[in-house]
Length: 334
Ligand SMILES: [Zn+2]
Image (cartoon, rainbow, N blue to C red; front, top):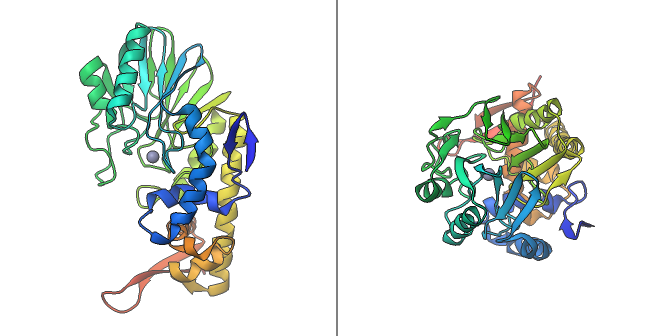
């Protein structure tokens, strides 16, 4: 852990435990990981208290209101961004939470702001469910990409304005450019505030925790490509949906890519060693730097890496085993 700007921030290159932080939450049905969740919670508690429920002016055009849904994966809570000084765009309205809705309506009223657009970066449950409720109270157009038909996605969000890569939303005093960044979710969008070169990254890049890439909607190859694509834009600052602002956006993106590729290399080495193996056999080799109690969780992350190796042509996958108990077996491509 290194201390930055008054907040504890995990160093992704040092901690395999924190590499799996998001996965721990996502797959927290595993009894054995309670201890690890506790460790992470303690490390995050100071940061959470600083942001949760708070309204903050982060730039001349942007307010940030953090929802009171702090947690292992949501960090201090989901950041809702209010963009513009008259008719505003609300990025990531957040989870369905009455206190957050009240806080949001109060701040709009106090600062005499009208809602023009309500735009979730994607349709996970901590990002979009407030959209419809906010629209009922404050108006505005629902804009974004609809949810894939998956149980864990918010089906209540149905965009009236369907956004695609390159689309722009122009207010009186701001322009937001839509950047399609699949990886964490297939419908994930980032938004670039052109006037301030500020990139709203949703869950594409978070501060202080790892992004879950959970197949099949999550895709590691798409994720790394979406990170590389950020070099095509003029960026000054990253405004994530969880955590504090990040400077040096290109270094941040490149650091995440390098770290994920390091894990991919270990997955490749595991395949080399075993020639062929299922997840249970590959995890102890690819994650030999984590506590074995975390293997069930690491398996989800490894699956995303193996899928990418298959997509890249470096590995093959086939079903093997007795009937009714078939499982995926990966091997090196010939
Ligand atoms: Zn998400």
